[in-house]
Amino acid sequence: MQDGKHVILCVDDDQDLLDALRLVLEKAEYTVIEARSAEQGLALYKESDPDLIIVDLMMEEVDAGTSLVRNLKAEGNTKPVYMLSSIGDNLNMNIDYNELGLSGVFQKPLDNQRLLTVLREKLK
Image (tube, rainbow, N blue to C red; front, side, top):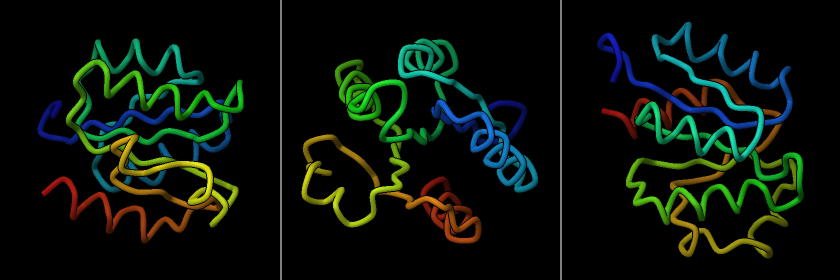
């Protein structure tokens, strides 16, 4: 927490999506930290100790999101991690949620109400 607000690290190479997430999350009284790459996301994770992490599945490289999640796990992360995906149900065939330690997946385009509901539940 920072200034009484939960800190959420959002990692995505799409600045428009990051801007949209920031608007929704800050309006809901969360503090948002943004990273535009998996490498930057890992560095910010180490610096900021976020309460929850949202990671895009496909960024600058096809497996950048899953690599970041594996690196977070290797660093000892115990905070909830959610993956953003635009590939729908095909994600289940390609990724083992349990192996990665994901708390869940949000499909693009994001349903803002579902996002906020899930975050409220996870961070209470």
